[in-house]
Image (cartoon, rainbow, N blue to C red; front, side, top):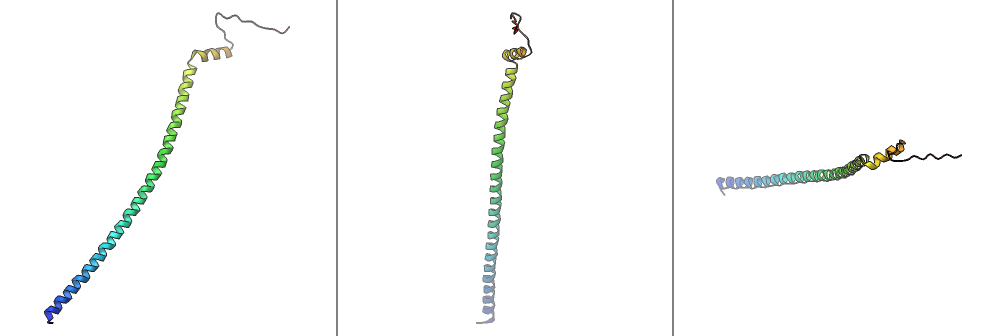
Length: 107
């Protein structure tokens, strides 16, 4: 082999070695990107689970608040009713105009 062929052979060997190194670097970068992607996905899934749990708590609180609101509305409607007004008037000792009061004594 002459010097030129030896030089070409060495250049080809270097190119092949550089190509292998380049492939290894690309594989390493691909592995790093895959690990980072999986880590981010895991973190996101954890956040989604946490947010879903919070959403269920908030929905429960909304249902409780709605039930309480309904109780308050029902109480307000009762307080404004004739039945409640008459009940409170009787407790205060009031009577209707057309009623006759009998007082019973124990003698």
